[in-house]
Length: 90
Image (tube, rainbow, N blue to C red; front, side):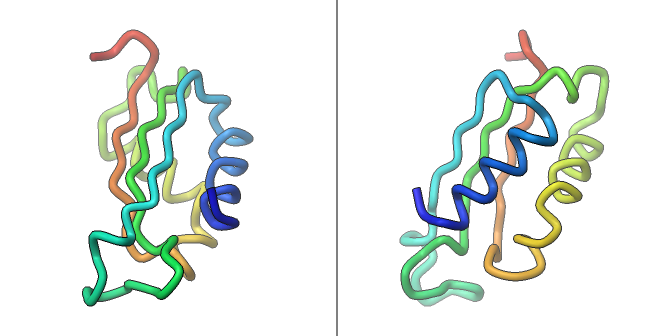
């Protein structure tokens, strides 16, 4: 992973202690689109599973993630696709 993906992983791990965390740099698929940067790390797919999401709606989960990643979302990350689950959810 690159520096931005590493920072995302560290912040999400600190904030949510996930039981599963997958971060995929999807920037290559957005070449020529808004927000694309040479070298990648502008578009990510995220799958996170954490107890912190239990009982929360999808939008509330996303808000928590965006709060944890405010610095990245304000700068180098243009797009973040999120799948956030509580343990045991399909």
